[in-house]
Amino acid sequence: MGKRKCAICGEWIDDNSESVPYKKRYAHLKCFNVAMQVVVSEKSRGEKATSAKPKTAKLTPQREVRAGLSEEEYQEKKQLCDYIRKCLNSDISIKIYKLMEDYIKKYKVSYHEIYETLYWYYSIENHPIQGDMIGIFPYIYDEARKELEVIENAQKDCAEKIGDIQRMYQEKTLTAPDIKDRVMKQIDISKIGE
Image 1: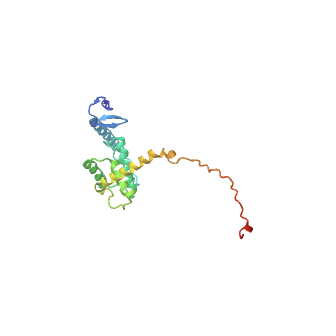
Image 2: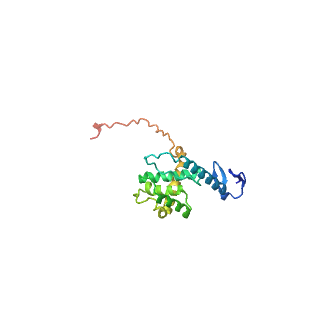
Image 3: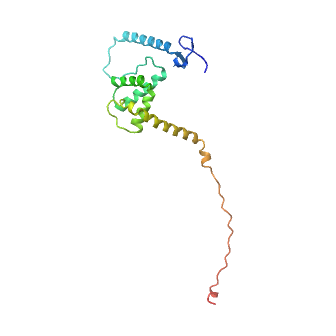
């Protein structure tokens, strides 16, 4: 893998493990964090200036905070939060947000892994939804990973073999042998008693 230039500061990235995807390129982790803090602070200043507007009485779902997340991570977080909202038929509580962040920090998992685990448990295995829905995550993660890997391998295997269907079920043309008309001698009934 060749060296990459940071999309923010323009310097070469020496250690790829300390880089993050940023706008279809890569950036130093430090540069990315500083850029995200600047964006968040500018947005908060803009919101303070416009906060004098009267608020509507209509409740809207909480929006996922984007600070410090790449576009891909933000989409994964949004997918997870939308799934939880759909299953609970309500907005996400602060407790659920806290649990998500704790799992990501403690277990070093991504939002997508949490989503896949919960999707497997509730949508594929059809377990009833109880409580905050996300509290079960650490207890089912390993089993979900194994089962999802089996499903993924089966799907890959099917995808590989789908092209071989023509060879699996080849058309064969069978021809029947020519059967000549057989002429059988007729039995003469008058000769039977003699």
